[in-house]
Length: 234
Image (tube, rainbow, N blue to C red; front, side, top):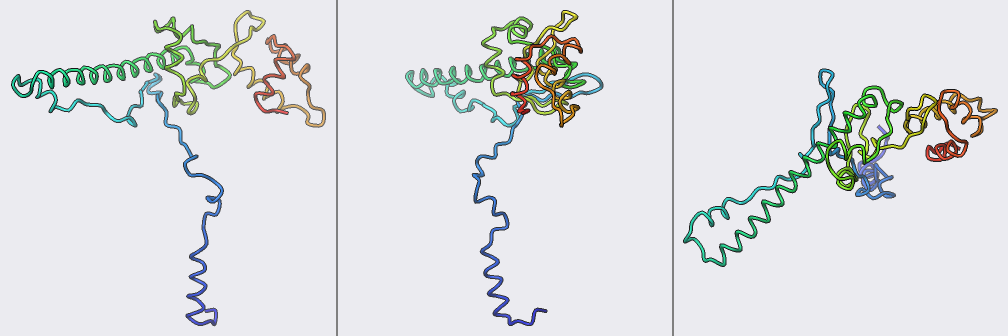
């Protein structure tokens, strides 16, 4: 087809084999690609939310039956060995119970978050309600520090996407009706206002504050600037 010798084709093929079809790999570390595996999965089934603690990725812990049999037979070992095995078995049982307790706590917290933020799960960020650790702690009957540890670096898969559990906790501001509105909702409204502005005459923070006040949200210019900065909006 090209009018060249077999040797020339072979030489060209040998050179092609040295090329990297994905040259971008030379500039990145494959170990940096970390995929999020949700700790909790929330699914809507027949109008109700079902909560599943995703422990499939964690190995199951079991006690080797051999050690149980050692204790079952009185003359199978000396007293020192028996005490050693009993100590280790008790430690193993404690570990298994602790893991199950952690799983139960995670389920309780997730269930509480789903109940309190159902509107957000149904309709999106505009319906996220102000919520703090104390609210959830009082609801599930646990200490705030326990709630904090249970939700730290945990992810939850919802109809609104995979989110950090901390995403459900947010501060709020009062509106003219005297009720609280979440900062997440205000940020969403702020983005909509900026998206609809005339780019030739952009709105300043004070004007945005005035527009939000017209929507019933009492917010200062300084807070608008803070939210805009958090959203990376110049």
